Structure formats: C-alpha cells, structure tokens
Picture 1 (cartoon, rainbow over the protein chains, first blue to last red):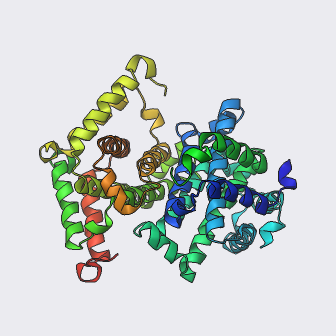
Picture 2 (picture 1 turned 30 degrees about the vertical axis):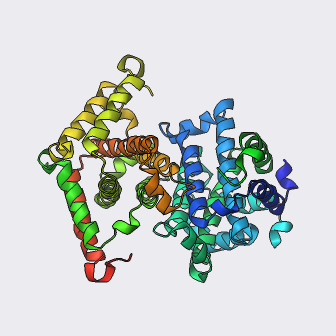
Picture 3 (picture 1 turned 90 degrees about the vertical axis):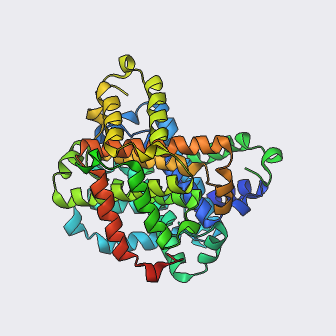
Length: 115
Length: 115
Length: 115
Length: 115
C-alpha cells in the first residue's frame, strides 16, 4: 500500500496545487469547506442508507459500490486536506491530539466491546 | 509541520490501535462509519452556521473556535482513517485517483476563478 | 392526535412569531437555514449511529431516546418551516408535487417491497 | 396558500399511503430514516455551498434553483412525516413543545438581533 510511504504533506500539496491552479482559495472559507465536507460525507452515507449494517459490509465486496465508496471517501479527505491547507492545520498533530483525548474519554477497561 | 514527515500509514495504524484495543471493529461497518463521519462533519459546520463566509475566516483567528474546528476536523479524519482500515482502502491511491478525475472534470481554463 | 386538526399554516405562524420576535430573519438565509436543517438532522442520526437498524426500532421504546428523537425531529421541522416562511414556499403544494413525482419514479408494481 | 387549510395529519396520510402501497415500512427504521433525512438536507445545502449567504438569497429568485430547493425541502419534509408516522409522533405537539423550550432558552430581551 502506498499509504506506507506517502506523507500527509504530499497529499496536502497535491490538493493545494489543484486548488491554486483554479484560484479556488477564495471559495474555500471555513464555512464553505465545512459544508462541502458534510455534503461528501452524506454522499458516502447514501450508498448504505437502506441496508442493514451487516449488509453494508457485504456491499463493499461489490466492485461498483466499493469504487463509489472509495471515491466518496476520497472526496471527504480531499476537502479535509483543503480545510487544513487554508487554515494552517497540521493534520498529524490534530489527529494525535484527538486520539490522545479519546484515550482518556474512552478508557479501554470501560469501553472494551461497548460504546 | 509534522505532516511533512508523517505517513498516512502511520496515522492509519494509530487509529487501528485505538479501535482494536477497544474491540470496536464490530461497530465499524461501512454504514455506521459513514454516519459517524457525517455527524462529525456536521459538528464542524455547526461552528460557522450563522456566520457569513467572510466572518468564518475571521472566526478561525479566535483561539477557541480554531481549537474546536481543529478537533472536529480531526474527528472527521480519524473516522475516515477507520473506514479505510476496515475496508482496505489505500488513501493515497484513492485521493490521487479522485484528484486526477477532478482535473478532467474541472479543466483549469474553464474553471479558473469560477466553479 | 392534534395533527388531525392543526394546519401547516398554524405551525408556520408559530415559527414566524418566534423568529420575528428575535429579529432573526437576517440570519435566515437559504444557505444558513440549509446548514441548520442538516445539523439538526445529523443530531437525530447521532442517536442511532452505533445501533443496528432493528435495534433502532427498539430504542424508540426507551422513553429518553424517544424524547430526544422527538425533539431533534421537531428541530428539523421548525427549521424547514422557517425556510418555507422566508422563501414563500407552500409546504402542502411542495410535498404533494414531490409525492406525485415519486409515484412516477417508483411505480408500485416495480418497487413493492424493494427499493 | 393551501398551507392555511391543509392539516399536518393530511400530509402524514399522503406519505403513509405512498409508503404502505410499496410495503416500505420495513425499511423505515429510525436509523434508516434519520440517514435519509440527513441526506436530503445535504442535497438542499448543496445548492448554496459555494455562494455567500447574501447570494443565496438572490439565488432563490432563479426559477431553477427555487424549484430545486423546493423539491429538496419537500424531500426532507416527506421523510420527517414518514419518521413521525412510523414512530407515532404528533408533529404539532412536538413542534409546540420545542418552540416553548426555545422561548426559555432564547429569551427575547437577550437574543433580539443576535444568536
């Protein structure tokens, strides 16, 4: 998997190049990007809307659903990268800080196998 | 910025460790995770709901809003990483494929400064 | 049930009185209200996020979940009524037109028991 | 406006007839319907995503945008009516209770012109 080698910074740059070539920074306000992220997340949900949770696992074996889900996930991620770019957010730092906080909020002994 | 050095794979592993320590893989179906991503995206939006797009830029200079937005963005990303983990999606590949597709959908000459 | 007697117009007026008393019309642009509707819809989802579809039926027998779901549904509806108020949309007409369109899109013989 | 005459109950019945003719009650669990409501709300947002709040007001003068927005609003409402139908929720009662609660949460003297 190329995720083993690609840095977050490389993906941020890829998105930044795409955005700046189109001079889209002007549209990429926090408000607009947060809407765009939510909309793409909603399109990902749409694939699984009427299926049970278990069925949604099986659906991912369907090559077309899998392709569509991968594209929608990519859309969410691209817009998150754009949000981080415009607002100078270090994703690595943000994710590590939140996971650390979640470790305290959800101690293993209390939340093993439950939520 | 540590994003220059951290690989996507390292963040995936960080999230996987958190999830598997709690045996939460059972809850992480595509359907459930897509809902969770959408919900966190919505919490990011909630910060900017009643502000104009321009005001939302200024809001990010407020240290509390900035902190809250960074946490919500991290929540979206953590769940996207969890989705990729459960479904064997290479994020680097998915993002690159979607950006390439977007290059064709939004040619620079036609979309410069417009959407 | 009072829904048998209350007109849609009465609920619209109730919401309009609440909004205008606070001079909130200025914030109720289509963009802002669409975000607010999506955010409340997301809070409704949040109640059922980690449960299976069947379990979500049972959850509605829990008085606290039922109360929370009823409040979140009301929030979505109140904001939809506000959207209709600001944009002179007749809800009865809009709903009937869409149901009629759906009758053509989803003919009974083809969609009975399936989607 | 026909909203002056149509009761909420009549719209609920209209939706119930549509749903039961297709035997779709089985898919209309609280979880699934909450997702469907959020997805339609997201489609409403999508119309205004890249526009400023003020521009979104002007957009509603465009007959095509207005038509699309009216349809998406109707979709949200239809699914809310379906949610109320499946879970025996009196919409009139739910909306009134929530508006009353909001009166206490947002006293006029404190929230006039602000949020």
